[in-house]
Image (cartoon, one colour):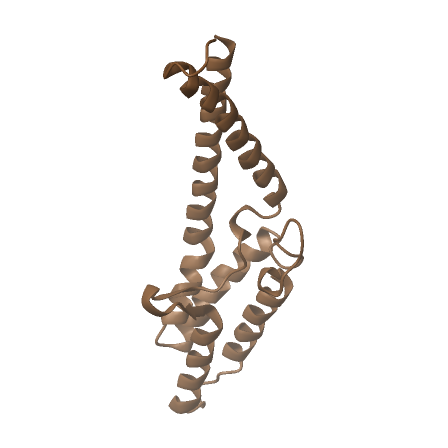
Length: 171
């Protein structure tokens, strides 16, 4: 009976882990990545600047401006400082555009912004460039442990429960 209860608790923990992680992804997409995508798609400098400002404010309010999102070792693609720096540099370029700036220069700045914000994934389309795991930063290690422990316990007790149910072992 206790093993069945532990199996149920491990399953609930893993479901909760997936739900919380999924909600964190949705919130980041809604409050930051979505605005970055709109900035990249903007046809005017003003609209791009407005959307980029929203995303940058979110990053600053959530302290997503430095460190790495990695847990065990750092890699360049998980460097928040570089990523945030690129976005703020892009914002400065947009701010330099004046009413006298030619349409060609405006278009070039918007194209550069698009290349900075989006990654081309070939057949899979384009996606917003962002360090992996940013949606749960700075709790990446806690989430890793939560997922690993829940998964291990579910395998351990769920495997035992399965073997009991098919008659391979006895309780």
